[in-house]
Image (tube, rainbow, N blue to C red; front, side, top):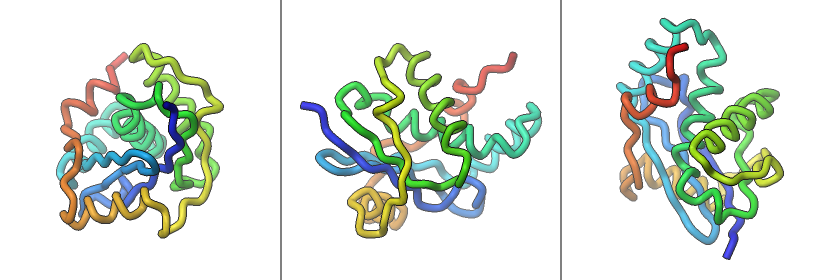
Length: 152
């Protein structure tokens, strides 16, 4: 049965002194964590590859992909918190490309952006994971991220 979820992020990718958690909830919950040292390493590598400021939006989309890829075909609608204002189209486009490249059947209408409040179950899951009150469902590695950014 398809379900509707919200997605929230705790600590932006650009804050490299702390881990980042991206989580979803409502009906089902899942959280992934990217350690601070992995963020620093992947940001350094993407800068070396000339990604510039876009790298933060591309990394956020890649984390969304890693979070959603196992469940996307059972999700009716994903509402993602607005983390990077006016970059939603770029983030959504990259996310859809990653999902489709992985062979997932996904429609652009499934994914939308809106303000997610602190009362959201997704926010609670992200905060609990960040505070180590709940283990992450997956810890993202540098190698895993790098695979999603093949050199041309």
